[in-house]
Length: 120
Image (cartoon, rainbow, N blue to C red):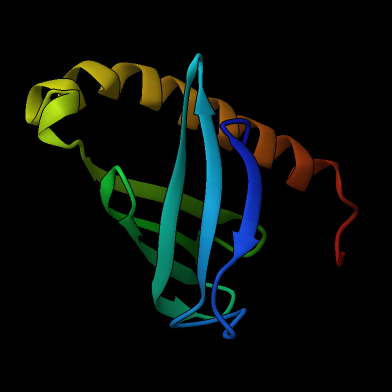
């Protein structure tokens, strides 16, 4: 994820529900620490998180079989900005830029996955 500069675990749990971490995030000149906790986990299929920092909300990654040799990967994110960053208006203004960043992140993930030999 190009916008993530560093990830620091903040809980004794390091995988699965309850794992928490701080993600140092940069979008252009803006920097923040995104505090997150895993709220749902299905090994190899789904992870959901709750954003608890400056920006709040939820996110979910899912991977589902799409035929014998394909996987459909989905990323859903719902973020809320604080009032002093424009609240719902600030969120709406930022949405196109965030969508562009996330599409780039997904493209880079796809490139990495498709470059790997089968079975790795």
